[in-house]
Length: 468
Image (cartoon, rainbow, N blue to C red; front, side):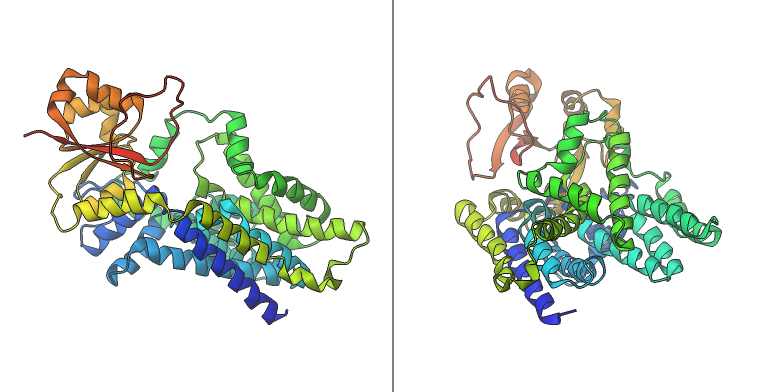
């Protein structure tokens, strides 16, 4: 292993991630977990709304980790940009050392993809648990193949509380163990059951249920159509149209060449298969392991194709400069887009508008509850029912608002919500528009919407306050 090559690769990753962190915002959902951390630090328990024991996060272990920056008065968003960067460097090391067998050529190819990939960067700077989950998952595979099987099964059992997809990798390793030893791995099975069951018992005693409310609420949203699933998992960005066929070719050619590649490849196939079977609506960070492992196979595919063409890439000295194209790409993106408008005009203004005042006795109605809850500290009535299961009592947002008459409405700036406020005789009299939080800094509400406009998710909100 050439340590100089590795450190140069690290430098490329660091530069690209920092550029991406300037351009792209924290995911709104990350603030949900951070608010759980806030309440732990304040002594209110692992809850989203004080005095309501609802587990609205699928990553309670990450909620515990989110207490670290709060204990030291560090902005959680900035802390997790650095934290996830460290996780990515750890992933880079594991991939280089074990999955790419220390190959300089494969390191250069993988670094180029890993540094540039827009989806990888979006997730990495988004402040979620996906980076830590992937790093520990790959570490679990390595521990298993290095005959430290007890540690591997223990680790993968515990990271179930980072992301439930850890159970898929446990299943893959369990099947692999049966295939290799011709015996059922009872001791590892019992170890995993104990390590998952004990925390789940504590969760049940605390919350009165095992499944997170966020999972229950999302399960009620219906099945995601097949082609939406395909796009969400494999083609979220035009860059994936290059990566996916290369990854498929790399899997076909290299899946059996190395146990590390075999297990990781089977894992992401089962991972994607589970999503197709259950057909949930998929948020970007769910697919991080699938995306990164595709990059591994895409790298091997290029090297293999080069050999087929009788090109020995290891002889080309200029190849070491290839990852610089990833840096150049992010510099171009920075030049065209500038600093994240969501960080400046949404999160930044929420922070400034609600700083220093006590809103704990105020009720906020919202669909996106992350940054709003984190910066206001108020009681959040969640229209999506991730943290307020009682909202299911009413059939729609209008009925919920009329029933509870919250102090504030934090609504998407779209024709449905704006029309509801303007046309409803009760709401139009009860609420006054205060401010718009839009990515482009727009302050005024739209007078009209184009009838052909399709409502898509975007972080553009309008805040209304109830009249006295």
